[in-house]
Length: 280
Image (cartoon, rainbow, N blue to C red):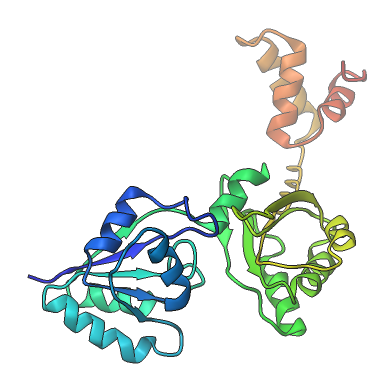
């Protein structure tokens, strides 16, 4: 019977941000496939976990995946972890997980910390729809084109940035998006954690010597106003108004508001057309 491939979320900074289940799985699996075995070693040492590790990163994932699949098929269980947070979100491991599914091997997520969701939860920005886009391109022209494709989206935008590129990245964001409200998180859950919500221009003024890893949350684009519907002839509008005032609404004011909503015009405009008076 094949083993199980566990996708294990690890802390993004504070070593206490790991679940009891994750610790149990890391102790019980045959091997841990880690993005950086040295960083994972610090976590394992902190919790006295002696499970062996092997590297699984962007440069060796293609060659390492068949080896790990073979171990899973022999009945050994494997845990995959990234440097920090939830694996496969802008991190390696996708090839291994896909290969496990293709081989009929069970893949089980062990949820936990995520820098993207941590920043969103504390930003106070509207999070009904979220788009996590990873790291922007490193070249300025590519980055500007990338931002331009995302500019008018209706979803909360989340991306990551390195300290040596954050100022250039926010400058390009300001150029393409305008002075939109955004949250910039730095070193989340660590001793020098910061999460500041302000317009992009103010972030640029305050970021003089950026250090640490950054998570940026950008407010969605304002929805474009709907175009007003073409108004009918005045006689038709008056007839509709009369029908509404004679119906269950009974109120002239409510009838005017209903017509304004129907034709997507300001209530004041509809008052002026029908009654010649200002809106109350």
